[in-house]
Image (cartoon, rainbow, N blue to C red; front, side):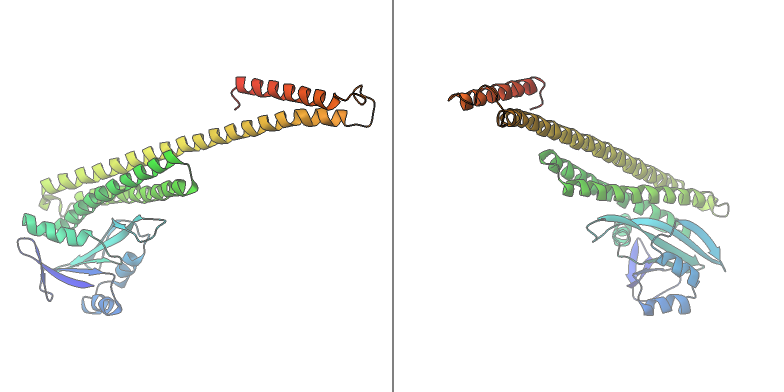
Length: 308
């Protein structure tokens, strides 16, 4: 999907390209790819880099074109990975500025509406990149809140009964947090590289730089906190499962020992040898009484040791 936006007291959508307008393309079709590579003459290597789902954030310059790749969060339809991060590329030269992503995101639309509410004026391409970094950090925090709700839900389910499904849900959340932490660290490195560019250092808005740094730091800290909580929770439940298994094994061992007592007595007195009770009409009752007495003593001893 291709859209054009002009900067006039916020971002306003227009029907066609005009100089210094912003071109946003999500999940480009073949026609849009042809438009980028042939009409705008964007380097094909830049396009292919953005298409790579594992591409790392960085800044690169080639033939006058500047490529800046950051990683932004999205909500996925994959049940096994409800949240993940994707590369979002910003390519610009002169009066051409294009953002490209191969997945549908909420960040661009949200930023467009936010710019209208706040009447934000984007000064130049690097100012635009910094604002995108700020917006992506805010969305990291929004998704981290949703992840925290999933952690609480999984914790409530595990308190009722420890099942594989709940443990798998925690593993899925842990994978999401790993993606978030890794991407936020890479975005932070990218931010500091942009911040320290000598050619543009004097033109940056200091308030905007401070906002981006604060939001990035907060998102990283929040992701690390949730990851540590989740790791501790999974370790705790692993110990609970191990303890439950030990209790079950102790109970099974106790029952086996108690059942062995009458079996052993019956086996001894069932042998075809003289035992003193073969002629007694009360022999069977004596054997049953002894078996019951010893079994009851075994139950008492195991109860005392709290094996039951």
